[in-house]
Image (cartoon, rainbow, N blue to C red):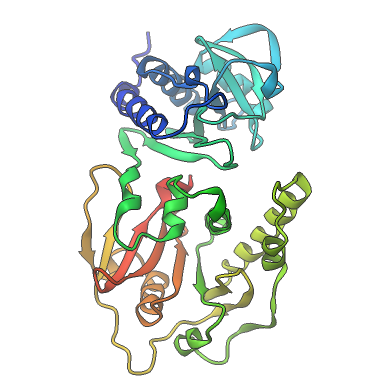
Length: 371
């Protein structure tokens, strides 16, 4: 008989506590049903089944599945099996080809897989198989939010529990706050940067995105001239969509936004940096960063990761990445009001921002929030 996945037993109580704490800090009205809050036993069983399913192969393919813990109520428009299935890794692997497309979840309730759904209510707990032995635990934080928030990342014997208190650090960028799930409907525009980051990471080629103030041209002091691919006038497809964002975005608008985000993020695969304004107007791509005239070279960073148990470290930019990371850190050191997003080919992702409190560039390692 197969032994259980030991990491599931270790992680489940911490994840259950995290979910309970998050729920306690949120209005638990009728739209936030308490029965969706899983206990440690349920969390362990979901993790265990998903982990062993991730190690199986069906006709040579790696299973890609998402397990959502919720009952098959009419509100979620469920596709229900006539006979619910046992929560078993072999069955999950066989079902995987039918549910591997994004947005489709296998519904689990009372240790049975009852069918599928594309609708996830607030606070619903989800276990997603990303790769063999790599799981992401997440949930939807509230009714108004359309995105999931990561709770933990499990990879083989490693457990990374997201530290919600990271949003309380001095000079925390709004992008990091949004990734942690603490943005409000009034700051929903920040989610465009989240989508850009996810899309940058997805293309797998690595890239850099510089976000600069739209009312200032000082960023150009840190760019080599001529720029390989300067854009004049600024390309405003993404900016126009955000300016005309309806109060209740429909599928057509969301699809258009997704295409515009992917178009901009795709440019970051070109050697050099892509430059956009804080209103998402595209100014250039393939731009080479240089040290501003009279500026000092960046020689030290504050490096943090929003993971429980992680501590801030001081490091040289070369210790966390290559030329792309070094040039992004230099850009932020010279342009304090800018933000630099850097994706590595190996999947790591870093947000560089200036920290007035530390009087230094702060490198936020956030790949655990983007999976």
